[in-house]
Image (cartoon, one colour):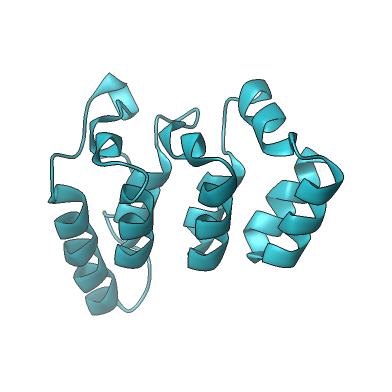
Length: 141
């Protein structure tokens, strides 16, 4: 079932997510306890699925605090992709997310820095014409 939730996150399919939660209301909590690595929220942030991110956060806001094996939180990923709207949605959970220790156990954001970083990365990504930028999630910084 975990694979189905991750696939729904990859596609940004909110209806599929709701069906899966309907069949097991604890699915997100179970997945959060089981895994290190990408959560469904990480996957949705990588895909830029704002509505899916919002739906996940309604059901389990604590997912926003999880870091993957590489030390990236969903906020790190959204900021690196330049997704201001997703950053804002994540920060609705709480500004404490700017203090989540990520890669190399460092705190990467302070205050409005996450939103500023998304704007810088978005501008750089556009100027390059693609997502091949030092601001990408795959390249720690």
